[in-house]
Image 1: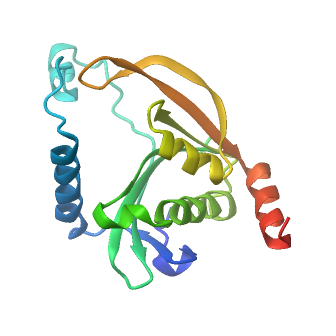
Image 2 (image 1 turned 90 degrees about the horizontal axis):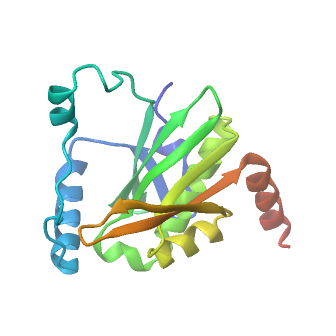
Length: 192
């Protein structure tokens, strides 16, 4: 599948474009600032890396991976403000949003909602997916509100499904179906 170009994915004030090599250092700096601000250090428990698992248990991990959509987010002025990643299960028409990140000073605006709505339009209108899903830490109230505002519905809770360095935490499972997105888009056009 061909990568979308920036002209294919405009959404009121944001552009989604393929990742470029110069995006890496900027993302690394944003993530380092976030870690410094939150004071998060090394986790209390260290889990093995993929390499360590492969060395200890040869052949246990699949060598195939689902296709991943990696897009960067720019504002209208062409300034790189974030990124998003999504794995695809094309057999079942499902996209799983694995990350959406808005860097530094750009977080306070509506960029995340605009980028997410733009991605959903691409998923349902161009890729013809049936479903887009994600999971969020239960403590991420702002992210949960963002996803609900874009039409995602809560489907359940994965209890104690990730370790945050201090304890096990829950994930909230959310999804939006193509029909829900289309209905919401029509309501927005009509002004309901």
